[in-house]
Image 1 (cartoon, rainbow, N blue to C red):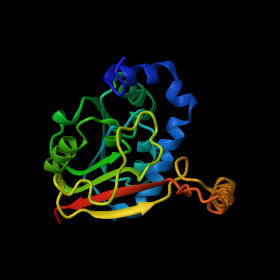
Image 2: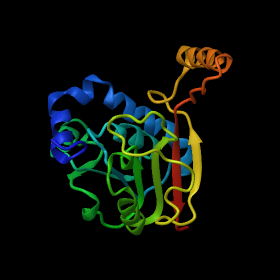
Image 3: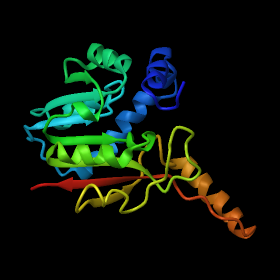
Length: 214
């Protein structure tokens, strides 16, 4: 089965593998970490599309942050969408599909999705074309070594060719970045690496590319 294909993700979700590895907790942590960079007011009443919503757990965070917004989750996995409708259908609508089915939305959020796709730039271009106000793309920043499911690393300016005038924010996120004791241990290990003349390991970070038409 091809890595990151529809069948691949259907299998991960239906087997419970994603859930058992803390996928839903990580999704909620990602959205919580991103909220300060959206710049949307609590009273925002437009449509927010979560592209690549997975099992839909991020909608709980979005609904709490934007109680008046209309929420729509889209994911390529029909298995994930079925789960999302059962568990979060009272918070948002959900549809199975890819970027080609997108219609215009006030806000499109694409969190930790494009690093899994072969054609990340062409998908980002479509997301921007379908965005009426704000587009938020978040991916791992300067990831090394790469997660086996991730196809590339991301640096500043990655989407400049397809999404104009992006603001960029680099930030840590729980369940991705090192926190607390793990961060302290990373610091100690890097001291040893420096003493041995070896390259230090950077803290894992996320980068958000924020584009708007306002």
